[in-house]
Amino acid sequence: MARRWLKQERRTKEELFDALVRNALGFVNSSIDHLQTKPKNAIVDLYTAVELFLKARLMKEHWTLMLSKPETGDLQNLAVGDFLSVYLDDALNRIPSILGERIDKTASDNFKALGEHRNQIVHFAHSGMDNPSKTQAGVIAEAWASWHYLHALLTGLWSDVFQPYAAELEVLNRRMMRQGDFIKTRFEILKPQIEIQEKKGKKIVPCGHCHMPAAIVGETHTWGADYTCMVCGVDDTAVEECHAELPCPSCNAPFEFFQKDLHACPHCGHVADTDILIDLCSKHFAEGDDWCEEGQLHIASCHKCEHPEPSVFFIEGMWSCVACFDRGWKAIMCERCDEFVTGDVERIQYFACHKCERQVREQMLRMVETSESVSRAEGSEEPAPMAKE
Ligand SMILES: [Zn+2]
Ligand SMILES: [Zn+2]
Ligand SMILES: [Zn+2]
Ligand SMILES: [Zn+2]
Image (tube, rainbow, N blue to C red; front, side, top):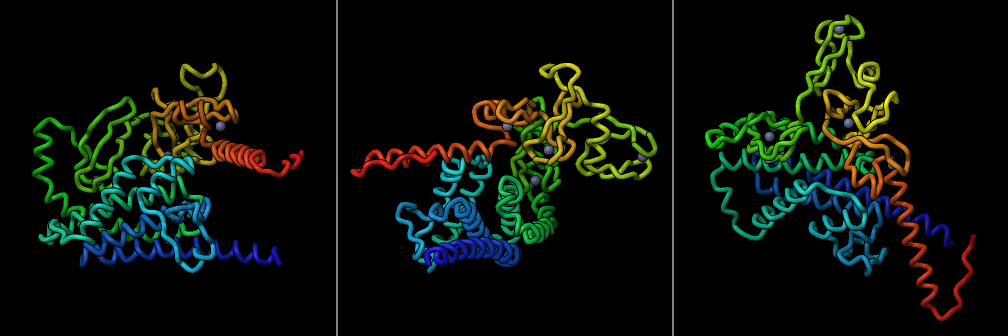
């Protein structure tokens, strides 16, 4: 009896998760439907989708985490939809504090701004939407930026969780990207403002997302320049270009290989995919930086794209990944799992690298659970049961 009940309970939770995600996907879809005709609805729908996806992520960890008060969680109520679920701010707090996952501040700020915009639309007569031509492009750009951050989470950090929906996400992403004409319109509208920034001495570079020359450079680092795009609102880093060349394995002519959009040799058309680039770089860039031991092969695993094979080489003074073409991170040996990885050095030293992170987190959770059951046992009147070895 008990066994059957448990089985049923699990299936119900999976169904709920699936329903939540399908609901979220539906809201993205209707948001795109509304972008050009009903921009207010588009913003409200997209915000709903963001909340639902964050809830789904929390629910995957534990179903009570999607409730506003997890301690009052009752699975019976959840099944019939009678619960007060977590709001955006709570969700954004719980993800780093309970799941230990870091959401970029630019992404969480963007979601909060979308939420404020949504509240203005829902609760007040929204003043910013009276001039249709201007606002349409603006709303599309806002939706574009929010989708950029959401899509990056769903297909990056949370790709395991949302893998079953990868095809649907890809379709939605393509639909969103097709709004490009409106991005051009917005660029034309903003052009005078961009020119003013340029006259003030700001450096303008092409945005890596909407491809408009509208990204205003802020802080610059050795690995590239941070920018904020005036057209699509995305904050990102324009990575320092790499002009190193490699001989094509087919025609032997040298070509600049470190380019995201390059898929073949420009001379003979021979494919230049990630596997081939790794193979070529292993021959030409197998030495690490000054921190590496001499004579040892040094190819790091990339924490950004988590390409299954080590794909980061030390090229022109910088660790450079030939799978995702990000560069400028430090590469070190993780003392926990002995993998040679890129990433935030402090995070690797004091917590874990991307290779052993899951394992370390599970260990920590087990430790917490054991200490909780020990303290519960100590606090009770009953003699504590002997721990099983
Ligand atoms: Zn842009
Ligand atoms: Zn060639
Ligand atoms: Zn990479
Ligand atoms: Zn590790």
